[in-house]
Amino acid sequence: MTSLDAMPSPPSGNPAELLGTSALLVDDAGRYLLHLRDANKPIWRPGQWGLLGGGTEPGESPAEGIARELLEETGLTVPDLAPFLVVDTFDVDGTLTDRCLVHVATLDRPAHEIPLHEGIQLRWTSIAETAHMTMDPGTTAVLREHQKHPRPRLDGNGVPPTVRVREGGEVRARSIVGAHLVLVRDGAVLLGKRHPDSAFAPSTWHVPAGHREPGESALACMVRETAEETGIAVEADALSLVHTVDVCNPGSPFPRVQLFFAAARWSGEPRVLEPDRCTEWRWWPLDALPDELVAYTRTALAAIAAGSVYSSLGWPE
Image 1 (cartoon, helix red, strand yellow):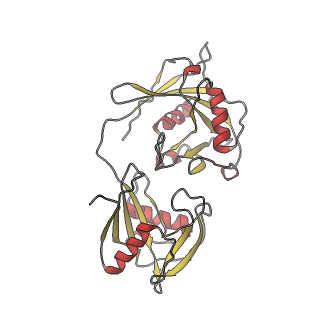
Image 2: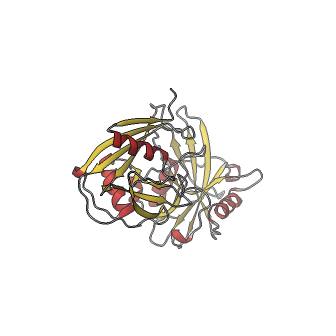
Image 3: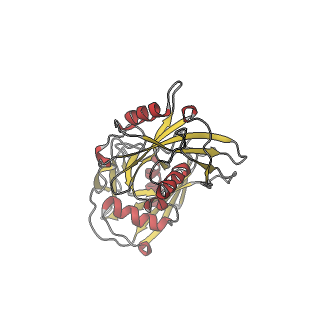
């Protein structure tokens, strides 16, 4: 777990010597363009929302670096990028581990019109919405500073102020919790076909599912994800836990606890509400499931049919 110490400190270092560079892009409504990073890769802040950007290359200035990163990640060329803030990240022992120069600019373009070549998603986000998202701590510090001082504040040498982000201490290993809905009608289960560009299981069938957000119970997550993905309304008191799959993925730093819920009642018909994630919904007979089915979902459905409440995948014997 991380904690923030975002109190501004005196400028430190020359921006030309910074290791990282990022872009704080703001639209006319005051929303921020945030980038959801891949979750299961050895990258900075995997699975968190943050700013577009990356490391500078040898001999490259931060201004050159952010122009290149934006072009590589989104195809964007953003004029009038101005230095806004330096973010220094320290470990629990107080050692500086990362330094990034954040540039700020105005951009008014719908997120769905911006091609994304790295990561999962781009989203225009209000400051209030970030409270319910898994945020990169440095980005959180930048947004808070922008709320207080929206215009760049440079010293006589053209250096912006600095905020400090401090990592927390060691914590116990954690697991990612996923909620999955097993909706059965006339002997058939509802499955959605994942988009071919999905980072996880592209072009593969899966039940309605998602990860719970901070402060959200698994039941609340299931209700929300079902409505967002399918338009089907289900209430928490109609859900019952029917199976748990304990998954250890070799490529992920965190194990995953996949909870499968059955619904005693619901209303509505499935619709494709997130076409960038799911291309169609279909009722599949339980005795004739598709070959292209997420592996742990197949395990869960077979176990549910057998009356088993727990399965494990990928763990050493």
